[in-house]
Image (cartoon, rainbow, N blue to C red; front, side, top):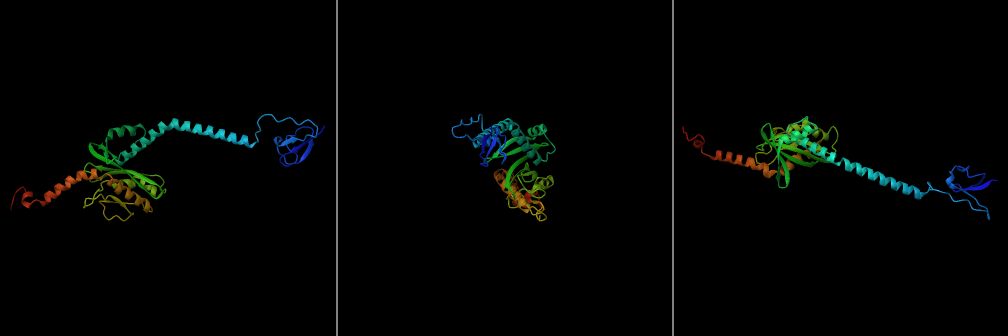
Length: 278
């Protein structure tokens, strides 16, 4: 005997011998079809199990999946944190070594060389810097930070023992333009700092970067990156302002040397000539 059924999607009523798999009119699945019970007849049995097409089921399923995925991500992140921290520390060590012109190392060789070269971590007004020994000569490495065109800049400037001249440099960036500002990470740009003076004749920290091709004082100025004026300006400010953070330390050694030079210059000629007169 045919039974009457109604589709809750299209609202149409139709007859069939048993519950159809789909509505013959709109093709909705069986979960949206219900039997029409005539007056006085026994009502159709209630559906058993979970209605996977209901909004409640969808929301609960999505919530459970979010919790599970979040838990898995937190677990993986926690498991890898120690390795990630070790890699970040090793990369920092490698950058410091590069500023000392020590390159081409990787893995455990970086850790070993760093332990060999860096002999002390010092402090200047709450800012740390490093004392190094390179082939028996004392060097100092000063961290610097700045701002480029699109994001943060950072680097390390190493100075000779007298702190009057740069020994080397390393610079990194967050998001400078590839092929332009990003070239501050290239060794060709960084190696320009080698041998440059840190201070000018007035005794001010003046090591800087100028527009490419505009160098006038080769003793203090470094050519910027061609086509990346704003990034080069950012490096210039980072170098000059960054070294000024350590002014008390940098000025300490040359101050004594400058005082001696001034004293010698003030002495009479016959005194400088060991007392001999013509």
